Length: 310
Image 1 (cartoon, rainbow, N blue to C red):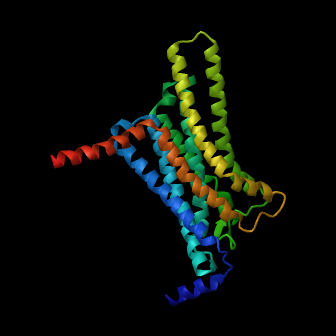
Image 2 (image 1 turned 90 degrees about the vertical axis):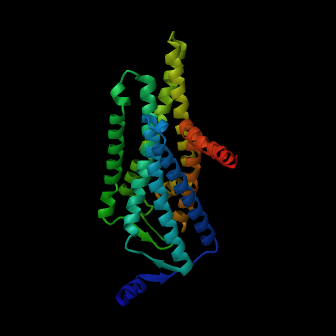
């Protein structure tokens, strides 16, 4: 016990704490906790409600699960930073590097979960006869592949000891500077899934416009427009992430030419933490079966209370 305390004291040092650190930490903890609660609630409802046991809802459940993991990781980041700021110390614990690895994994698999939703909608609209690609078996395989890729791609810079502890920001991350690893991480986690989702959207827009000009079955046109609407909703979710992810992206781009601000990670992650509950609220608003299931449960409770009183 004494040896452990000695090790911790030798690995920590006092640091300057700005007045805005604590309020920002509290905001981040509140946002990440909210995203965890929403993700867990939506996931539980999808599991329990048999009307939600469809292929499209399975993809929604995957997004909720990945959001739950990402939210839990961001909460861990926030609590660790909050504790160090309260103690006014800089201390890299034994799980710091591992948290960074899980962070890259969870952010990646979350973005790819939105891509899978868009791809599924595109297949239904453009290739309705490709029944195997629309099957639960194929979609489960796709989910597994995105999880495996997201688990593997952060390993190179983890085992090469490129993830370091940033004293000023109280976090372990790849340093923001012009490097292959930072560009590689940005592409794997962020750029590739987002660009592919946007590409699917624009291709579906062109497809709907094309069949609208041709003599086409009304059912085909209605189905294509319905799926386009669903992809538009996914793009809105992506847009929320893009908008609130601007500081993170801007600091990465800035680091290629100059040194980013001293507290760049704190600022960037604050916007990321705020974006996650916003995305989950939008996901609820856009997912009609999920919304219907929750409203059914809410409306059922007053009826039960009235029946009990009578």
